[in-house]
Image 1 (tube, rainbow, N blue to C red):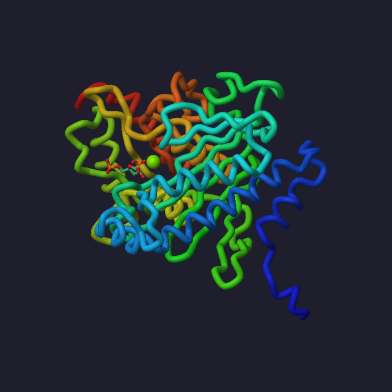
Image 2 (cartoon, rainbow, N blue to C red):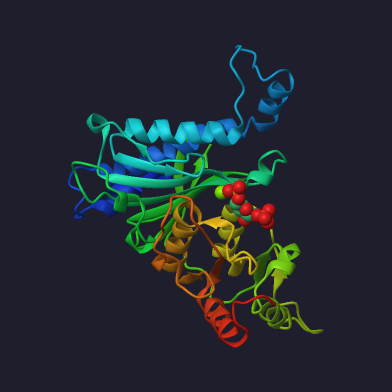
Length: 339
Ligand code: AHM
Ligand code: MG
């Protein structure tokens, strides 16, 4: 075998291969995904120094070069914005870290709009546990100006979505609506290689991810649903196991590969969920559906939610298709009111 044949397919090669015959005439879609990969590499470099950044912070918020130390989520946000701005593929962005839409100057603007959470899993950033970047990609409506409906639109209009997980290795998972593929960053050469192609979520739920300490705030359906789920385990066999990291990306990634369900239900008292529609729930719901899974807020399909604001929140239940169907049965039986 030649040396070249021993290498895997790179992210850029894969995206280009899949774009053949697509209407991405200007090549911007391929370029955009490649540039998201670049942002992921730059963020990886910072995440790997997380403890050191904190150390500089402790010495007076100034690092050895005399620069002000920023928190890691700020660094990730600025990196993502800057890389996408310079890519020439993006007209506007929405970020968890920014109150308003970030518009790209017209001379640098491209065909796409991106919503992202630059570093999700804030409670895990400082304690060396997996965190990630989540992104949703839409095609802009109007080539001349950015309009409100370019950003505030249902998740079913996404043309691509993905996440980058900063774990023992950095992995980038994305869907173009046809397949879900995973790439792992080889730190020795700085390239992403295809490591899992056409991921399908296993049909059986073997893992449960939920912050059970939120029980006082759950709607009536949640506890009986969880009781039923746990009762699949008996003296003979443990069929379901609890796995909760507290980083949505990491919890979702594990459930995608192993088969599981993640819940962050709507708070029955306030009627609000915690997770954000545009850049947390929509991209993962899109990936889940393409991989054969499903996602709901308890009542509605996540991808059909019509967002009213950039930072709208929702309840989220995401996992295997069979599990989401079971959730619907419990919602119908017990309701979404307070327990
Ligand atoms: P963040 O965007 O501030 O990081 O919040 C989102 C995170 C998710 O990654 C995680 O699943 C969830 O919040 C955990 O919340 P809680 O600590 O309330 O269980
Ligand atoms: Mg987040």
